[in-house]
Image (cartoon, rainbow, N blue to C red; front, side, top):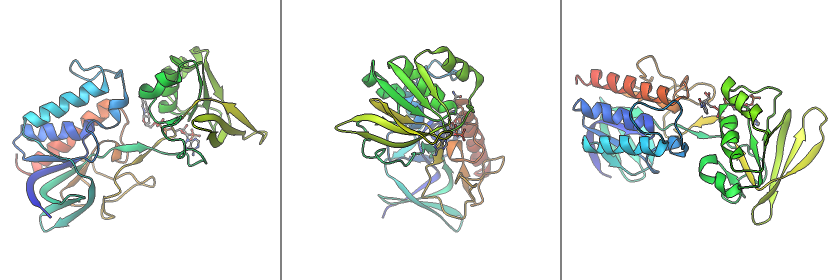
Length: 305
Ligand code: NAP
């Protein structure tokens, strides 16, 4: 096990983590990031950022790449390992990973959130063979085909609109009778003739042969089941935090998101939670950047930088 010392370890290199690491490093805080996957987080799936962030990046990939480059130029060290634990030993925090253990005076948990699964038969079996979580990346594969999108929030509506530019028809299956999305997204959905709302309906299964060819749904009013022939299936039913490694000492809300105070400090001394892993996170890119700033400022204050 290696024991490397930093002032700050940021776990997660989505927009929040990268921006926090960059801002702390600018103040002379010796910073490392820990990330198991590619940097960028969920934002790299967004082709056109709206509203556009400060600067001239228009896509999520551009924004994440710029932040990564800036952090690296400021000396932020990248540790490409999976965080598996977080403990406190005296006045230092210890982040354990699948590759070692790293000590720091402060830790920012910025691991974000991941899309929840519906949990219906076939969903995991057809992953990558018709079941997708990225409309921007996989939409062109469904050109002139029918697809099913599940959910009634901002994500489902936004991704249905993206898919409507490629697909013949988008069946927008929602268990409720009204969306809980921003008005401009509801208006846009209503104005796209090839988005077909399917209200009051739940998905029972995803089926196919080599790839998805139908989705079985059930109308909650009549209890009648039917099949929707389609080539693609996208569930956008909300998010869950991606921080299984975080100890019980850090309080969580009922959905599992990490509870933090106004400075983004958690119940575990020296540990901060920022971005989509945090309870009460606003959900917008501007909120991610604001969280990064708040957490970095709090860490710098605590470290006397
Ligand atoms: P969300 O707001 O939590 O909406 C989840 C939707 O999925 C709801 O309509 C919910 O139905 C439905 N749902 C939940 N569990 C389900 C299940 N087991 N079976 C069927 N349907 C289920 O999630 P989200 O749309 O991913 O948005 C997450 C956050 O990101 C929000 O704060 C949102 O505003 C933000 N966001 C913003 C933008 C933007 O500003 N452009 C874009 C995307 C996301 P009910 O309504 O019946 O509960």
